[in-house]
Image 1 (cartoon, rainbow, N blue to C red):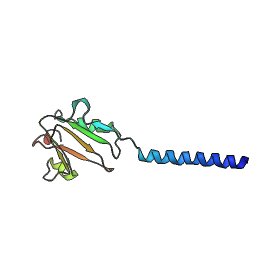
Image 2 (spheres, helix red, strand yellow):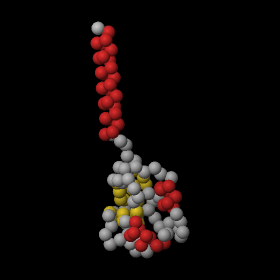
Image 3 (cartoon, rainbow, N blue to C red):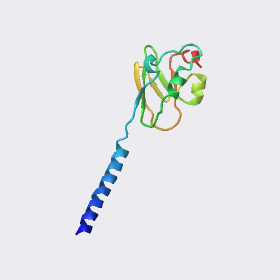
Length: 124
């Protein structure tokens, strides 16, 4: 009788552990980051590493989002090669609505540039 009670308690405890483990896997909390903080997506001062400094203080993970707030501009996700050239004929993502959200859907580097001609060269 005591062993039946013990086995029943163990089964309940094991079930709770399995349930809580599954629950944690399905309900991972993502974070939304405002790009540039209070300054938003703007043209940085000459030779500024504003966005590099901003990003280096964050811990990004898959399913996080980055929000771009801007006026009279746009945001593009491009390849590293296009980033180095500060232009893209075929961006991976484009938005110009003033409040754009991009989901980090994979691990690795993402390259963001302004779609307004000349903006990128001001701080490369």
